[in-house]
Length: 185
Image (cartoon, rainbow, N blue to C red; front, side, top):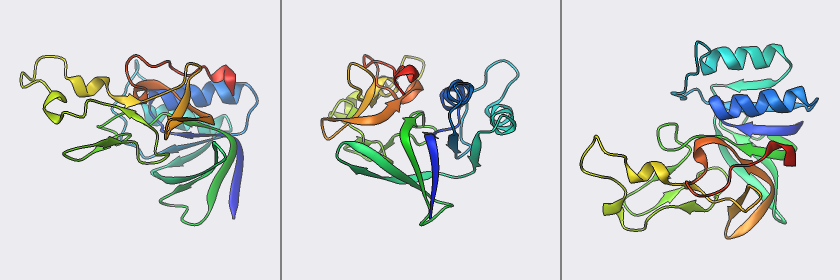
C-alpha cells in the first residue's frame, strides 16, 4: 500500500519544518518524516513544537520515523520507505531532503567515505580523512562543510546525474553548492 502526497520531506529539523510550512501554505499535501534527533532551536519554538503546529495545519507528521531508502527510476524519486511503515511506501511528485549532517545522521561515514544514506546522493568531501577535522577542537571543523552536491538550480545529484524531483535544503547541502528554491516544486 502507498501513501500519496504532493511533497514528502525527509527531516523534521529547522529546514524541514520551514519547508513544510511554506509548502503547506501553498496548498500542497505535505508529509514530513522526522526521526527526532534535531539539535536545532529557533527562539522558543523547538522542532517538536513546530512539528505539532504543522500537524495542526494539516501536514502529515511521521514523528519518530526514519527514511531508510528510496526508489529512483529515470532520474526521479518514485517513493521512499521508512523504518516504521515497512512495505508501505510514501509516494509523491516531489521530495525534499532536509536531514542535516552528521549529528542527525543525514550523512554517515566510515574511515574512508562519507555518504548520504536515503537517496545515495553525491557527497562533497575530501578523500583524505586526515583533512576531515582540525585537531584544535576550538577551530572550525572541515567536516562541517561537507554535504550533498546540488545542481545549479538546487536539485540533488546522485551518480553525477540530477534527480529531477529531489531538492535539498538546510545544512545537508555542501558548502559552495546552491540551496534549493522551493518555488521550483
